[in-house]
Length: 71
Image (cartoon, rainbow, N blue to C red; front, side):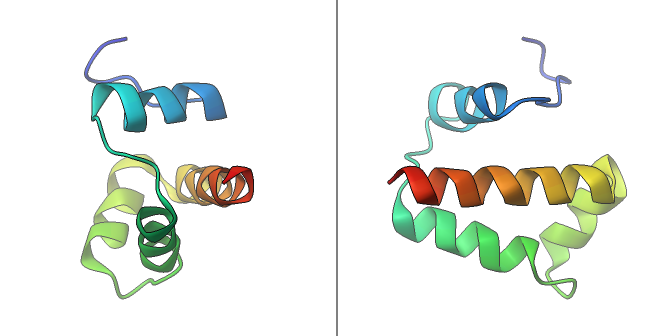
């Protein structure tokens, strides 16, 4: 997987977060990211949408929600 690869599936996304970035997928982390992704005023969310588009923000939000349901 190259540095420019944008995850297309939940499994790819989870691999990027947990394995490549070594970010534990914990309840607090998930809740923080869901809140940020739902906030148009969040600077990083605005940048994310600028770089990857609104459909990718929605898809990523769904993946965080799925991860929360799997805890």
